[in-house]
Image (cartoon, rainbow, N blue to C red; front, side):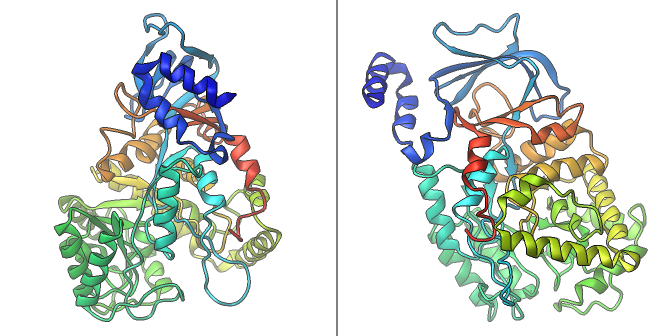
Length: 480
């Protein structure tokens, strides 16, 4: 009966054919989570934080037609089309969908002794979407075929999840710590690997800790020839050297930059703890750090903030969020809480609090100087940083770093879209853009914790029930 009604409606609404086609391709497995799917929908009396960094605007109307924003303005002057479904969103705020720029599809496996990271194709797509993340870059893949197939299934309406930009498998040199990583033999191997995965659909690459300068240079050259960007979680290569080699983005910030270690050997990854400790003597306002920041900006190198994963190393810092614990398998929860307790046991001798504060300061300074700061969560570490929830925590931590709430939201939406080359489609709320947006209870421009109060998440105009998505994957994180 529902299909007959939909078919008749589509016949009557020929101008809305694209909407009808989009609805028709959603499988029952996806439509079960869709709460709002009207062809013409008006969000009335809503507060708008548009992602540009501008102040919030109260009592607005946003009109969605065929999956796109067609009107946005004051409620008193913005016309609502006849026949539109109208939602009175008094007391709510709408923001652009978050653009997660370090959002893996894998998570550490609890126990077993081996460093394995199983693909979370069941739980993570739903949790990203439920958390308000409508676009992600996977930023390093351990199961690239799975990521590519998952993207295809989501795009085809078979599974619920965000729009996925698939990063190829890690470009790692000799000494990889994870069994799922290929170890490059030389620069030619790096070039061939890039070419192979571009042909299969990868849209970015990530260099990893033990890559050599020659391998990185070859990978960058091959990727750039196809108009594709390369980012890096580096160790063997310092940030300024990577910028000179043509890298486009650097993951995590200065917590992983090894160039300030006095005895750093070229092309060799030193002890990461020693490199991190060396940062304690580096002043963010001092010349060495300022020169590095200016060099990155001059080379148009972005930096991806992943504050949640570093927060877990700071004793007593990461909130014990019941939503996160409920999402885990019992084994994953026990593993995380046990490791968290061990971190706390070492509080008296830990450098992590000081290093974390320095990272916060660096990211704010980099952005203030004009650098393009991106946002992600990195669901790795020892657990506890989970898709969607971690993306929300990232925005909260940006505010702690010194950004205003609207500035932090700009980083987590518009900046990511700009780096992906999709700012004309997503990243801010504007007429003509895709209706990728999040309805929140409260006002995150006044209280950033309200970013956790997600009610509806719209992707291409379809409004997903956040609570229903979360409930559907309870107890799966750590398994699949």
